[in-house]
Length: 179
Image (cartoon, rainbow, N blue to C red):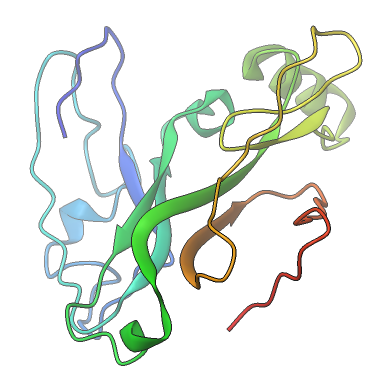
């Protein structure tokens, strides 16, 4: 990871596990708890995380563990492919589409955190985003996120639900099945 910005950060790989004694790595300094067992990555510097993945594959995500940077968008999907995927013969199209679902707030995280600390009430997100697009009643309408597919083909879709808000996924008049 390289910090191009004038901020420091620390990365946490959500749901990535290891059979090692340490959660992600054999190096406790890579556990991403800033100021506890790891120093944040300083502005304009880098750090290489070494993560033992073993045989796991799937859709995961990473995010900053420093302050409340996650709420302001410091996160991304992490797709780990299995080159020997036993289900690969089921798909006509694989490794092309990722569906990312996230919470979204109209305000930045700092005022939300101040309100939470004063009241003890957890802020509820204003909307949900799907691949960065969503609707909110005080903002201009943004087109929905669309993934174009060809009828009759079977797709492998990586779905990351990094969200507390309830979202209902639909597929128009088509049948959507999960395997």
